[in-house]
Amino acid sequence: MMSRSCIIRGADKADMPICAAILNDWIDETSWMPRVHDHEDVERYYSDIVFQERQVKIADIDGRVCAFMALSNDAYVTALYANRAHRRAGLGKSLIDHAKTLFPDQLNLWTFDENKEAQRFYNREKFIEVRRTNGDNEENLPDILFQWAPTEGATS
Image 1: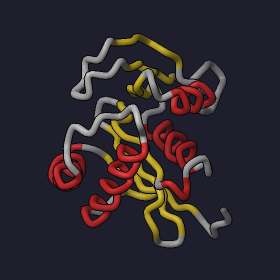
Image 2: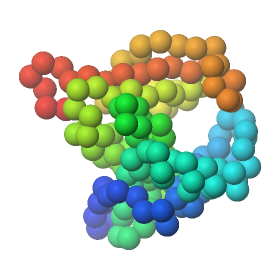
Image 3: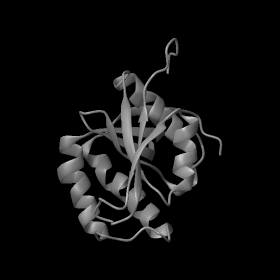
Image 4: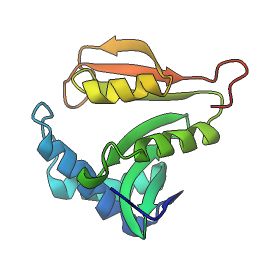
């Protein structure tokens, strides 16, 4: 996929339906992921809660939202998703690199045990596994806490 430029920017409230659609599409396409909330609830949650309580960053290519990341104030990545056409195109790395500049001492995130592709990505990005649960989440799926911290002498 050739694109002219990717800009990482803060989200506007108008971006939230697009972010929710990216997440909804991923849930619909992922066979092991249960749908806990319908599409409208996800969109409402992103507009009313995520936008208000998180830093949401957008990977914008030529004026289009192609990926997004949500960050909590305590250095957790609470969402990182790309639309189908832009998966494996480097947008996740760009967003994670940006998050590392915002939280240069430590960054944390949870991913589902079943999500092997995400685990490979986070391992490449120097996250290490901290602990596992048997499903202490609303999906009741086993998950893994990952953490990134800069290594001595490294810049990211």
